[in-house]
Length: 433
Image 1: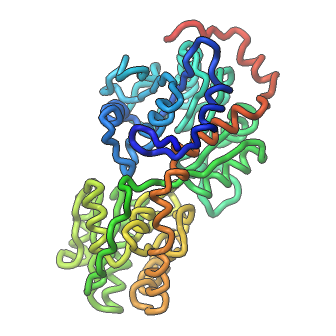
Image 2 (image 1 turned 45 degrees about the horizontal axis):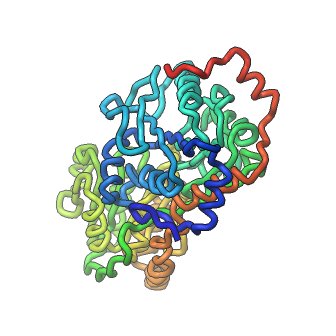
Image 3 (image 1 turned 120 degrees about the horizontal axis):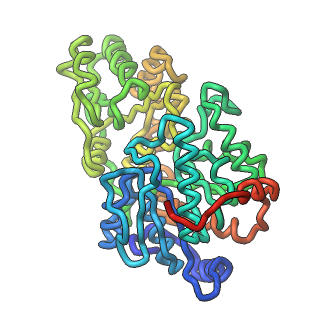
């Protein structure tokens, strides 16, 4: 079984050799172009080269697993970054990186569509000049402008395409979702997602044409942490970005109402920009029962989960969740969760859901999870079931990426020939701009 330098994979060796034989061109190494979701890539490569990457850290998890798979395939890798602070050129043996060009911004996407189109065309030129056999895209582009990219095209979804309470996207979700419908049917060869909901959405967008795989986040250690005892005073933990659309103000007011109904309850926030909540804490008189910890490293987050009675993810409908990673970390820590309907992608039997944007429903759900003995015991018991899947590397993103590439390589190309002709007309892929 192939595990990779950082132990992120579980791939059958015979299947890997068969894939290499199928993809590799005579006399040339396999080449993989990767477009990470996160802009910071250089430090990830450094950690990977030292074999020290932490699979729990979302900024580096996926690039680490991509590099593990590439090394196992004997492939050269070209990474793309959107951050001007990143190093470019050779980062390690067989690993190079360049900036996207045209648009250099630390933001996830340029705001103007014309800029996105120009950037995508620039990417197409660079990819084809690199001569990649496999292209892995972890963020949205203008897929119409991507027509003509050579090699296998794998789409990796790290957030849902639209809110999970709708079967199809609406104008609220953006006109650019039309791109995904086109790409799912005429550009992509396979797809993978970090949530079941994301996989279902891509299945609908592609009309059932694509092979689609669902990955599961991983725990870095070989064994799971011990289960900590529950606190005597009910303690609710929030972990994540402290921004309004994460439901942080709803949570403060819900816990205030909870305290008025049931007595002492503590609330802890772990996330960046804690100053966002200071006025609200003063407004509700929460200085004695609300703690603002700031952003914490992963080990400290797990410690806080061990001190908590439960985790709360009160995300509002204005925010598109993909994989609320902390729900998985709560499960690893053996803690139940209360989460809005926006987070249902990753919810399991240890998660109690409530209707998003409904503060009263949030209060009721917290009361049910903390003070209804039957519900509380059921959720806590469920939080202890299935934890071992987070150390099963067959479900990791890297292993599922292998399966996606394998399926794409086995399938006959199904692209629309008229679209490829349109892309090829007048296009010059020889120069890297």
